[in-house]
Image (cartoon, rainbow over all chains, first blue to last red; front, side):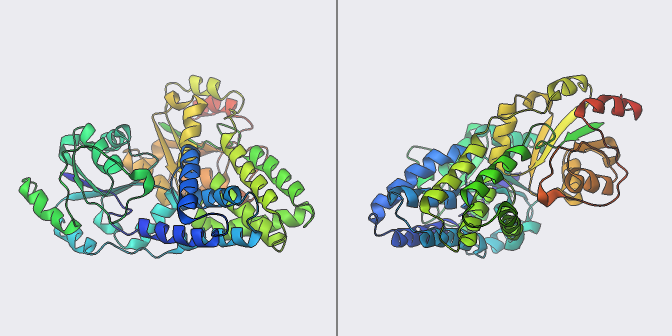
Length: 226
Length: 226
């Protein structure tokens, strides 16, 4: 049995940093709109840029700058744009903060082969995996552009793993749970306390939800996977 | 025998687009410095950001904005920054223009197993591979963060390929030629008419240099690889 782990908001905190950055951005631009208006405008710009920019801090920073120019009708100052560049740098420099208990759980799951399968910016994700100290727990790490069924299938084929021998663990229903179940794998949903607006999902699914990663070893044992 | 191909400036034109963008950037900022001064300042900023940003258009665009604010002492206008964002969008939207004769050469090499191994932004590179129409020629495509010996070794191990059965073809000595020779593979250097400042390299190497990809099949035949 191979266990795949999402990284952002599953192994380490991520979205909370973006949320803090959003708040700073809204404060910076408070002359040009209230927080809700700014957030809605940013959501639109990010959605439009996503097929071209993909995910990650660089894409986010470019969308923030575009949003600031747009929502201020070009009145935002160069100093404010410099501050937005700094928000991006700060997000990239942010030390990796592991979710409570991650190391303990990975230790407990020592008999299972584990992979990281994460979406995002290649450079930033690899540097976070490196600085997280978690690399040695994992057999493979894959940074992918999209978490769709075809991508999971390609990764499993590459490593000669049948989907029936694969469990994916992550915080996002559309990225970590549904596509894996679609190709015949198992999935475990571990919600994070905030969800990125672009990952919101309504709908049914059969995957078990656990409140904390610490419940994973018992769940896998229940499934007879130990 | 597996043949690895670099993509940017080996299969399709890339650096010429960045060069054209540099010229537009220098024109845009001509009030704040001559082209040489601007280019040198940009080189410094890109070098400083590279460990954090990596390669690709988004990294480039963020460095352009930082350079513009910096070199103008904050006097660059918001409209000029909007124009820089547009330069980045234009680079991402630029249609893939294949190097002359690429399709013909790949056809001629039909008996060899071929891979793309390219550095850069994951999303942009995958979308260019897709829109290039070349995907069906290749067994695998790998977008990597660094082209160092360890990365080549990892990719070859992943696919169960011995370096002695691998030839890498590309325009960059430090990225495509030297690291592959270091792990015991073969390499063929196909210079592009311009070289990105960050890929300049002085030094000796034993790899053959060909003027055009069209010479590759004959070279491989000379090596007895057909």
